[in-house]
Length: 79
Image 1 (cartoon, one colour):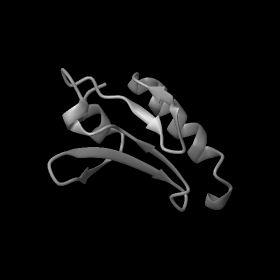
Image 2 (cartoon, one colour; image 1 turned 90 degrees about the vertical axis):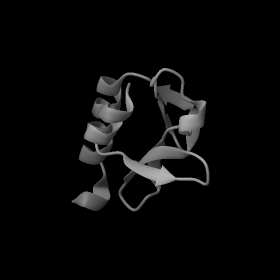
Image 3 (cartoon, rainbow, N blue to C red; image 1 turned 120 degrees about the vertical axis):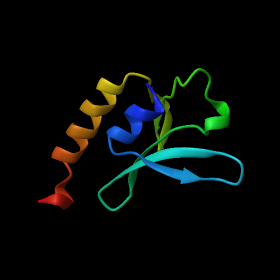
Image 4 (spheres, rainbow, N blue to C red; image 1 turned 120 degrees about the horizontal axis):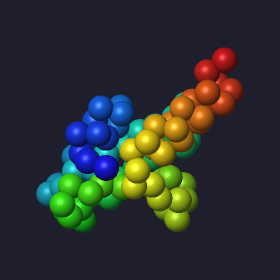
């Protein structure tokens, strides 16, 4: 996925000292999606990890959109 796709999907750019990365928080921030820093990305091929479990990694923007939709739809705090 590209940086542009992340932004279009609602991810927010976070600034580090010499790098940046993207996050998307659910509910009260107890669940988040996060990317590695731009200094780790090659050829604009970004990926997203579940912050709480970095072994869950997604490189397809359509899968990320589905994950966001499912988590937001089932967030009991939103009801």
